[in-house]
Amino acid sequence: AQSVTQLGSHVSVSEGALVLLRCNYSSSVPPYLFWYVQYPNQGLQLLLKYTSAATLVKGINGFEAEFKKSETSFHLTKPSAHMSDAAEYFCAVSVNDYKLSFGAGTTVTVRA
Amino acid sequence: GAVVSQHPSWVICKSGTSVKIECRSLDFQATTMFWYRQFPKQSLMLMATSNEGSKATYEQGVEKDKFLINHASLTLSTLTVTSAHPEDSSFYICSANLLAGVGYEQYFGPGTRLTVT
Image (cartoon, rainbow over all chains, first blue to last red; front, side, top):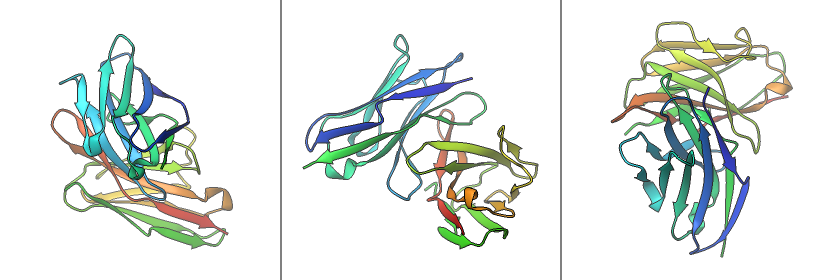
């Protein structure tokens, strides 16, 4: 079975600073990996996904993630945080059955 | 594109009553939809996979007789919480699968907040 572990339940950054959210995966077969964002009382929005086409994946809102097989990682970054980036972020993995397994989530707060 | 709606967005019901939540894919057809449950400050827990025209597949520990799922068309899945109790209060989110490029992507509805009094 596949799973993901998000390191750090809460990340606080200053506006304009680098955002780094960590995700490690476990899968016996090549996985699909996703990052989603959730704003309060809303559903999830897809930021980006990895499907083996390219190890560096660019998503919406200036986010990108790099797939590193040797480290079984798929960390999410954004060079310069904006106040609107304050939200909950989920890493997720799926394999052949299309079902997603989510990490526990990381809450991002942005300080002015 | 790829918009998923849920109705209602919030509902309050009395203990012992049943509540139906609708999930619709507005601009695409989805043979597979998923239902999740999310407790405050926690991750999403997959409850069941809903397949159009067939029975839903429930995750271990989810009561299929309590959480009735119907996927009658390619754009509509419903979740009915039967004989609701306060412990069923939660945020319920649906998603619909869409083949996008290489592999599938799940598009999520905005969620339904259920409060059972």
